[in-house]
Length: 122
Image (cartoon, rainbow, N blue to C red):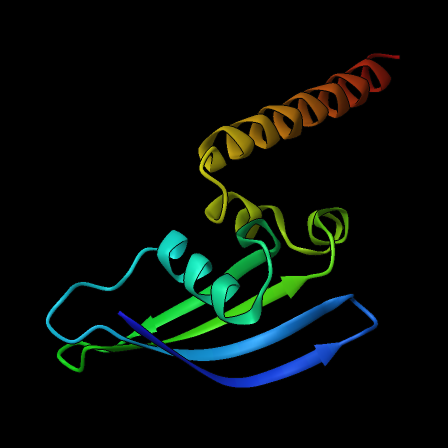
């Protein structure tokens, strides 16, 4: 796997760098998000925990993929900015995060439903 960095844009307002890169993987399958995170982090001199892969675009038969990633200055800013599904995709325990979020959402929905039902009885 070879990583070729393309456009790097500094977004100071959100405290991140937005990177577009190309991954060459001729004769092998598309690399995992973790492998790409580590490659980007090593080339840009940052920690892999601060790199969030947004998209991996792969076309059949070419052996190359385009990658869009965000590299944050701190984990707190990343967790506040990135959507939950992107955070879940980029962490090893992502399914657990999504399950917790679904559970909280269901509890809120149930609480709201009970409140409406109680108001309708009066």
